[in-house]
Length: 101
Length: 412
Image (tube, rainbow over all chains, first blue to last red):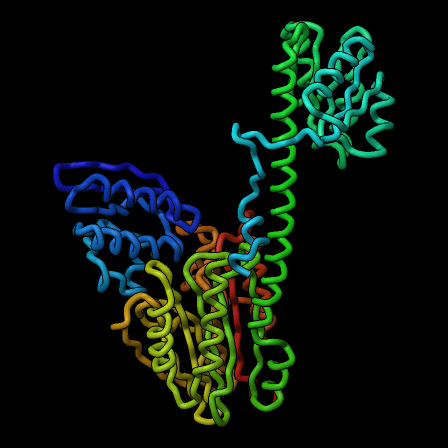
């Protein structure tokens, strides 16, 4: 997983690229800690640059949405395509978290 | 045995240290190798004065190698001399010895000459101190190397113990899968033949499949995949296996089974963990298959001997994500010669997309055009051979493949 973070006045946006998988769990949780610590009202996980994810990666989206909710932030999963989009559709994840296609 | 003294010791490969953070290593066996008697005695005296009690001293590389055969020291302090070549036989010989290569060597060089330092490192020294030296510097270097050696020893022991535990746990997990004797027994009572392949990427895995009697001439076949890999995912497979054994009722439809499993897993799984699952009831009396999916990859079905294989399965919530999830049972013909091919996502995501060997569509096409033969075992072999021919790396995810076949009448 490669990450680029962009901070605006209201939003913490993490742009993920490459592959998000089991081995990224620890780095991903640190990223969420950073997002909460940034004290922005909106967390955006921009996944347009991801090429693939595994099941643990899908679980990380849920953890991100849950972390945002518990910290009082709004959450958006932005720009899924290709393999990520297929998995979101297969698992109906867009019915559980806010996905911006 | 969580919380037992043994498990705590395993979890913490550290050691007892004094107030300054140093471990007492003065009981270590140190071998001093020095061709110069005065220099040798100085080093030995410095060690003794500092509390080290188990010290050997020899004057040549050959003597040192003989002494090491009798018992490995925790540290060798060796005077490297370019003129006499002292130390330059010992270091390479130790590094080439499989059993002694990890013994640290603290090399004493005659001067601070950078060339000599490079030569000493190149021949296998772990660390250096140059004459003239301060005794305290020597003693600090000795202590650091001894502490490091003990840490490596503890970590090696921890790793070996953990590997043994994993090996045993993998055996336990393997026993959750249907055993061949049970499958043979089913084969005798039903026109039903099954072949399977299971490989956990980390020794333990998050995949589990099973077969249960589901009434007169009916069997339940399921394949589940917990998110993640390794120990935590493997624990979840045990949960699922136990729950199905304790709670499966034969009248339940696949969707009803997914519903009760979902309620159970929502209660026990932490946020972010879930399972995908495909389950089917093969009814050899009604010649139908009922199936339901919880976010499992689309699977592959041939409904009769003369039919092509086709992709089946609808989107659905994974298990353990939301208690509001509902599931639907689909019904299709399952007649003589039918075959159901179930698999976990590793089969269609290795290597990771977009370069995977198979997608579900490609797999279906492969099976339809395959020369792999007509039995479930031949089909599994052909699929696996094609997969493993197409990849160079180890599997990143757990892999399960099952082919369940309604054996044609007259072939049983």
